[in-house]
Amino acid sequence: MAFKAPTAAPRNIVVIGGGAIGSSTAYFLTRHQHYNRTIHSVALLEASQIAGGSSGKSGGLLAAWATPKCIAPLSFKVHGELAKEHGGDKRWGHRNVYCAEVDLEAQDLDKAVDHSHLQGIRDDEGKCPKALDWILPKSLKTYKQIGTPRDSAQVNSYLYTTSMAKLAEDHGAQVIIGRATKINYSEDSRRAVSVTYSVNGSTTKLEATDVVIAAGPWTTNLFPRAKLLTPRGHSVVVKPSENLSPYILFPKIEPAPDTTLEGLISPEIYPRPDDDLNNFDTVYASGPDDYDVSLPSSTEEVESDPQKCTAVWDALKSVSQQIHDGKIITKQACYKPQIRQHEDDEEVGPMVGPTGIEGLWLATGHDEWGMQNSAGTGLVMSEMIFDGKAHSANCESLDPKYFLEAE
Image 1 (cartoon, rainbow, N blue to C red):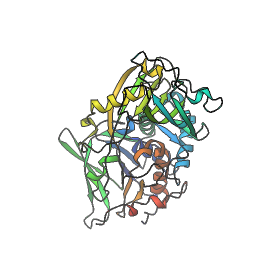
Image 2 (image 1 turned 90 degrees about the horizontal axis):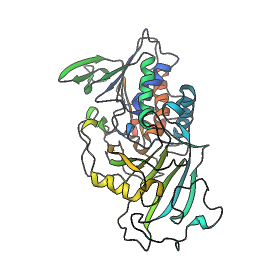
Image 3 (image 1 turned 45 degrees about the vertical axis):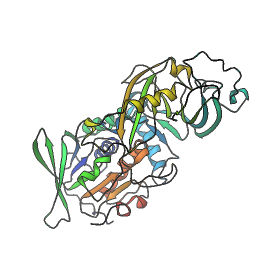
Image 4 (image 1 turned 90 degrees about the vertical axis):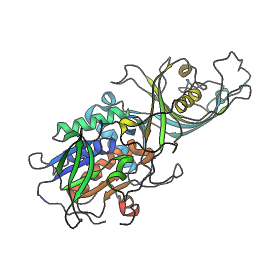
């Protein structure tokens, strides 16, 4: 779609959505070389609280090998630069990690069973890193490394998102807690001119030259042509009995032959360092997506299913003594914006760019790679708005025209 040519005229930019995408976009808008806080305005409009949705409840994996390939390497690099500039290692838990796919045999650690006869790959020297010492020795059947500290990292998603919003605010952005209810257009419907939002039943209108919809799964409520699926995911955060080495695992878990365990899921496992939320190391783990419950009206109304959280915990504590002997500190659920269901390595979106309506932009549909691609998305969105095109990455394949429904 055609871009609006850059001008020196004042820009009043409204970013809808205080998740990682919206907060990163606000950050990079306020850092752009053409941004002048005396003549331009940036408003970050969030319905409930910054990082209230999936951006506050995700695992926070960063990977140069993520999808889509047109933006993932850039975003991984920019995440590293942001951490270096703003002390992200301390401020939002940025650290480089190993990633691996593993086959694990679950053990029933609640019962006194002798597992000494079982064989794991730790019995074969060199097939598993010695530092991965928190998986039960007899449980690990296969280990396939898919990421190293050179191309893989992690952040605490909540702390990253809230930090980006605060850093944007420090450079002149206005953070507004209010629910966007309508995008208003010119009489000929060719141009976005303002955003109406509500606070405690009272409505206010924000005049705008540019509106960026970064509302995640709630995008469709404001722009129906951007149809999205809204899968729900459950996760838990655990305080382990000991600190765990930085290995993010994507397991396939099967019960050991001599156990009565059955029906186990295979949650992703993310050891985390201590941070400003917890002064101790934690483990984040997330289960599979479901489409059982429709999207609520806001992040404040998201409910978790206790049984799904228990399923994550049951699988976790069957493969690690340190996790088994720990305790759950958080059970939660969130919804993701998904263009359509796809295979793990299949590229589907996100939508990043102009909508065909002057001044109206989309940054949504990031699915499982929202945190990873947030920094890159924010950077290219700022370039599109202030420069008229993205120059840090070729985002043509992410043009919303390929995904929007016809008018």
